[in-house]
Image 1 (tube, one colour):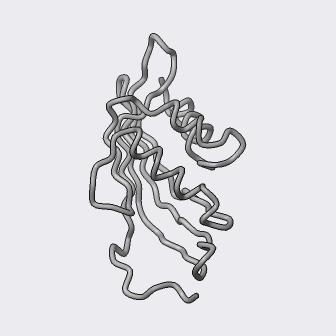
Image 2 (image 1 turned 90 degrees about the vertical axis):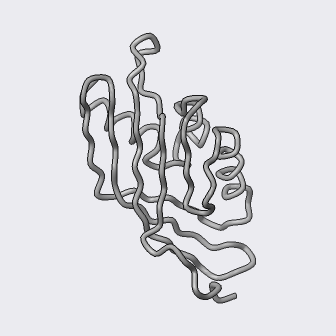
Length: 138
């Protein structure tokens, strides 16, 4: 349990989000009782609801949907890990114009020594600008 293996956990499981391993790598590392707050809605998701929300984004309704993290910081203390950073979500809904949304995220992780891996306990995604004033151009 150190910063290097927390960083590897993030990059492998969440960095590209829908990169080489696909979303299943991400979902496998989310604890069954995790607290998940997505920037699209004011409601707390359970793991299944969060998966459905992410699957909706990837269902073909968007062209070239991407979640790009940047300015990432890591902290490990005991068996707990904290990951914070900024992100950009961008892509083009098939029925509307290009969209880009910037925000901040935080993740709280716990190192499961029995499984010998990190588990995500909390994932909070928050936009920097919380209201959309105008629809994307069609």
